[in-house]
Every structure is written in C-alpha cells, then in structure tokens.
Length: 339
Image 1 (cartoon, rainbow, N blue to C red):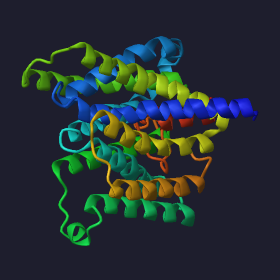
Image 2: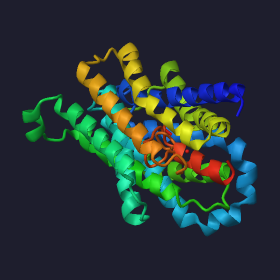
Image 3: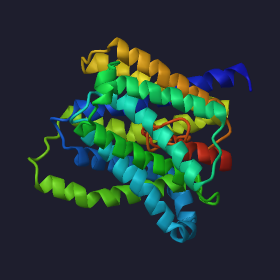
C-alpha cells in the first residue's frame, strides 16, 4: 500500500461521508417543499436511473441469479431502500438535523449487532461490548440533555419514534446484506434493490400525492433530488468502494464515523441550527464507542442505506450512508450500498 494510494483512499472515503452526511440536512431542510414519501421516491428513482448504465450489463447477465434470489432481494430492498430513508425523512419534520444524524447513525449499528448476535449467532467481543456501551451512554446523554430527571421521565417524541423505526429497518438491512449471495455482483445487487425498493415506494407515493398539495419543482428542489440520486446513491457508493480498494474495508469503515460530525457542521452552517456542549460530548462518546466496536472486528463485512453499505458495528448511513454495507460486502467478494 503506497502513500499515494493511502492519500487517494482517504480523499475518496471523506468525499463519500460528506455526501452521505448531507442526507440528514436535506431531511430537515425541505420539509416545507416536498412530503417525505415523495422525497424518498424521487431520490431512489433518480438513483435507480443513474445506477442503471453502470450496472445494466452485469445485471442482464445475472438475471437468472436475480430470479433465484428474488425473495431475499425484495426484503433487502424493502428495509434498506423503501423504508429506511422514508422514515428518516418523516422524522425530519419533527427532529433537528443534528439529532437526526447523531441518533440515526448510532442506534442502527447497535441494533444490527444485537440482531446479528441473535439470528446469525455472531459473537460479541468484550471490546465491541465496551464500545456499544459507550455509544448507549452517548445516546442517552443526548436524549436527556444531561438531565437525569429528564431521562427518568423521558417520553419519545414523534420524531424519535420514526428515527428508531428507520434505524431498526436499516439494522435489519445490514444483517440481510451480510447474507448476500457471492454469485451476485455488487452492481447487479444495487440495480436490483434500487429498482425494487423504488417500485415498492410507488403505492405510498401515489397516495401521498393524491392527499397533499402539488409539489412545486423549482431549481433548488430539482438540484436536491439530483444530489440525493446521483450523489448520495451513486457517487458516494463508488467513492466508498474505491476507498475500500485503496485502504481495506476495516480502515475505510472508520471514516463512516465522520458522518454525524459533517452533518452537525452542515446543520449549523446551512440550517442555522445551534450546536450545544451536549452535542459535542454525546457525539464524542458515540464516535469513540463506534471506533472501539469497529476495531474489534476490522474484517467484518452501508449504502444504503446510511450509509449506505455498512458494517453492523459501524452504523450507517446514508445512506446514505445506506449503502456502505453492500459496498463492503462486495469488496470482500469481488472487492463489494446510502445514506
């Protein structure tokens, strides 16, 4: 591994996390312009269109495999594409972007590790357990704002429930992606779940469209949809996989912990949200915990989520970070999500 490859890999990984981090800003920033299901539908439709030229050739060759595993692919698409970002965008109507990023990107990996331990019989090392414990402390600190009485009398808000539902969906997605048949290539996998997930969003999109005022597509909104579809769904995934090829999956996974940091900075600069000491402390705790949990199994196998293609010990998203996991799985099979 040359220094040049290391530097290029770092740039690629940071680029992917910056793009994925913007998903949380969008979730909060366009709540007055477009309903959540419509935003999710247009995002994945755009992503599906952009991924098709990249993966169509292999997808066509692997159609028999896609048909063979269609039930599995539908479940992956349903949890990681149809539900995860939709729930995140709904939560954006109730929860500040800083909290969206911190809660969504930390609760999902904890759930994923628990699910993997239960259903896949994966062992949880002491180091990983310590890391997860630190994460939980950080999350509780954020939810309680450092007030023990508030924590004891805590009641989940509407946004919290949507966030946790989304985190659970992405955790299930992460566990499912670990079971991806090695015979299905990374690009065919993405083409299949992108289009299937978008198709399953269609009924909810049509219902929402018929029960809400028409969406006004101005230059800003169109730019955001292109950013989500091309950037968060495709470019970030390609950058992430290229980074894995340069740095390896374990080292690259650590960069996923930058997503809540970038999201927080963007929320302050773009949405004028206030960052408080409690955000810094809780953020430091959860990132430290995720790093410890990830170090314990650097070779374990987003995107989509949200990171996109994520290791169970390292989020997620977007997206965006929804498709990190699939990307890393592919890297181990043919060197294989969003956020």
